Length: 124
Length: 319
Image (cartoon, rainbow over all chains, first blue to last red; front, side, top):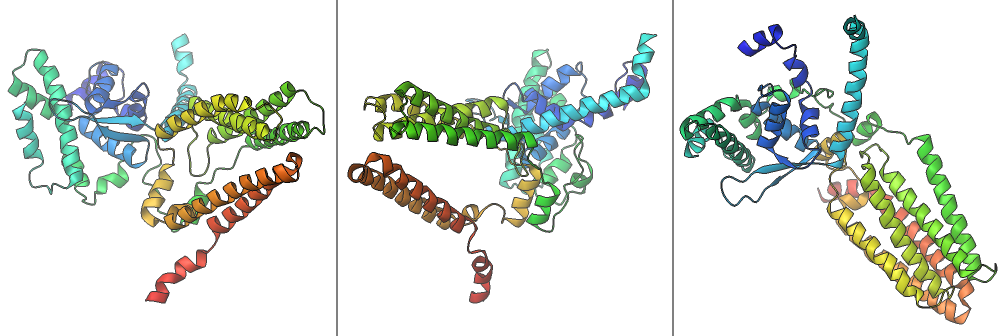
């Protein structure tokens, strides 16, 4: 709660807007190769400057949904020690949906930019 | 690390440990251990690290309940990620098909038709050359076969890279792989066939093998690494109605019978091809393959779409 209040004052950043794209963000982290939950979480955490903007519990729900829709495939790693890790692999369907979501985001961003006239503001 | 186990056992206390819940628990545990190890590396005691990692996890009760099979109210409403909210429920497969229909792009249709024309034209010319009706040097016949094989590969690769009603497109590198695999296999088979028709000296069989073997290996590699490309709506309808797909998907026996018939037809066609070739002359032997192909397509049409009423009527007869 404290985070949200401070973020409006300090860094201009909308965590809600970020959370709205959790599925696409997770797909993006898997594009370069298979990862397990903590690696995905860490990639998102590092990209957001160390802030825990997307909760791990939310991510587990996302993995379940993506697996159900066939956008990722899960498989168990063969770690010799400690708990076995569940890895996620991007499927062809996942790649296609990711590409479509990115295109939708770019188009939406352009529309919002135009509506808010951010270009004009920064030019001044 | 034992603290992680204990905290997790507490979180999962009182939940029916179905295989799915067990799965989720093990997944969370491995991730928590990795996070706890990271915190520990910054100089925190193992116990505190485990507690901190567990606290960061957030509320998992809804997640556990969902994995345990409880009807979750949050699932339908909270679907972030810019997707259309809860997937629509379809009354029938046909309705779902209609709602999600993707029409083929005009460019794709034109491309495939042109590709097919190139295949037919190149094969016809090469066939006339092989039958000595046209006097073509061997190298020209080979070039025609390469053209036909390349066009066949193009049709396959181009088709796979298209979005369809039930499938997402295959990414370009994979589609390229299928193009290559098809091109190599088809070229090898065509070279072998034309050598059989005495268009080339028999050492050409060796060259054909050099093309077919990598082509088949590439096909196997692509097949083994192929991931899901079915769309989410189609997977959902498949789960709910269970009767999507063609007859061979639903009726493995029909598919097996079809496989046997196919083998019989093509073996017969090849035998007939050789017999006609040695008796009536090689110029006419290809007719046997055409006949085989016609019978094969009729069989496919008959078996893939036929006998629908019987499958629905069968339960009534018994009841």
